[in-house]
Amino acid sequence: MVRTCDYPGCSNKDVADSPHGFHRIPVTDIALRQLWILAMGFHVDTKVVKMKKLRVCGAHFSEDDYVSPCPGNRKKRILKKSAVPAPQVNKTIYQDSLELASTTPRVTVSI
Image 1 (cartoon, rainbow, N blue to C red):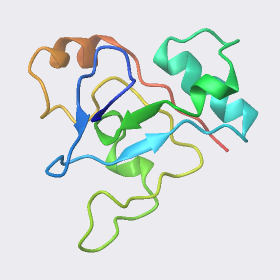
Image 2: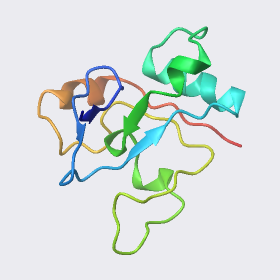
Image 3: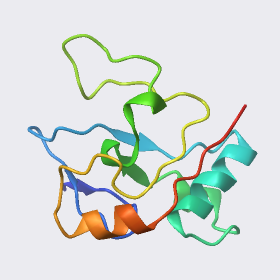
């Protein structure tokens, strides 16, 4: 079974030649989890059990959202604790996503 990004409107797949890593929704940091849920348009009462299964691809994060790139392994990248997904930050994926990315504001967090 191939995993697909759970960000609404994104159809990026986690396959061997994918340029993006996939990230889990933070479940232990409640405040950050709420920001991710709101950014993705999910209901704030979404159960943690369901969230543990969800993944968001790297197309929804900017280079500034990462601690630092892992040399030689683009998929193994660590997000900063303040990173929150946004619609198609990496705009090279799908042309139809460009409109969504340009009209939706980015959520930023200061920790």
